[in-house]
Image (cartoon, rainbow, N blue to C red; front, side):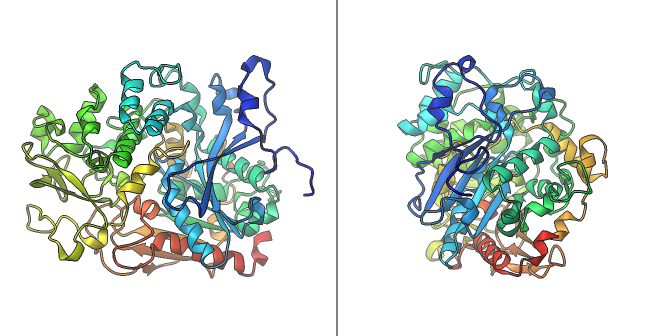
Length: 573
């Protein structure tokens, strides 16, 4: 490219202070494609091996979107790369560009990104991992969480979001109302895919380089979004195929998902939360307990869990509100009577800050399969089964409020040296050592560590509806851009499945199991990892209890090396 920098190239990095230090009225809008990058000073233990940066690309929304915050004219992602790798991503050996699933933020991918990069580096390859943060994350206000993390004090966040206290001279303006977020009614599949395309074209401008090195993919709902991307005609002219989605990628990956266009999976959840989502008439997901207010809590819990793992103030000082109290009853009720009465309340127990976070996400606690990660296990007092909203003998709750302290065993401590694991009401262990795979400490960190956090608080319902309609064959309006339905089959593909994706009933022991390949390309393959839950394919620790390397990231690294080292004659077709 020479020494001259062009707008839209990786070199077009603008200093944030020059953009935002003066009133907006006095500053001309940046040029589309302007890229702003800043280092993330992560607390990750491998931060000297893996560099992380927060990247923003200016891409103004069309006028048809109506009034929206200026910050929503930017697309964001987290870029992870080897510390000794090339600064220019076009010179990396491979670049994963991955989109999160339902309610997922870019920090979902922190652990799998770091582990994949290190696995590839151990094999002499420089691999990058870009974790996309959907545009709707621009509505989040992370000021209180950032202040709490800096001070190691979750109380600052409680005070900011619920107590009317200032942070940096500002008070929290409140959760964004559906009326103020009306522009999200246009934030569907088409804009999501255009944003992805923009990230690729600005980050790696040469399409031939993208077609040799970029591996596109997603987790959970990100799989169908990836399939739509592969099938998309970006210029609306099917006779010109350089812009076809599948021609931007060397390969595809799906993490506990499928690579076909479809909506939400059918749900047997009697709480009908999944069933209510597509029917939600508002611009963003707002179905209790999945509302922006409650989704603000995990990063605050993460601050307490990371900096004060044996502290007890996170739950003790948790503010009261209708949404928070309902979410607490949903998560921690033994049966319908306890849910209805709120007696005993989880607030009647003394639990550590780690328990407060793990209770939301752990596979032996959460009733929602799509939020589960295998973080360890509850300890310190008697337990009983969680029978609400449906009986599940693998879910455990604290039973006795008089217990002095319930605390958390890390995944490395569960069943160590043959230590007994508590039994459920059927006389079976709630868990096994082999099925605990994610570090509660690193999981806590990823809740708050980066500017793009773990949860998407204002997930656009238009995206849910578009995926469902596209999966049912609708090709009207924006969906008419699905011109290449066999796009996902035009490139090698890897599927990594969680053995316990929907429940904890599958065997937990043994190496990954090979499954049928997702398409006929020679390098395509699929594996299922025993004991993993839905989030574990992203969050699992580098060191596993069975002595094996972490299999999700290892499969990704090996796939990248195979794809980029293989005969690439197909990529121009």
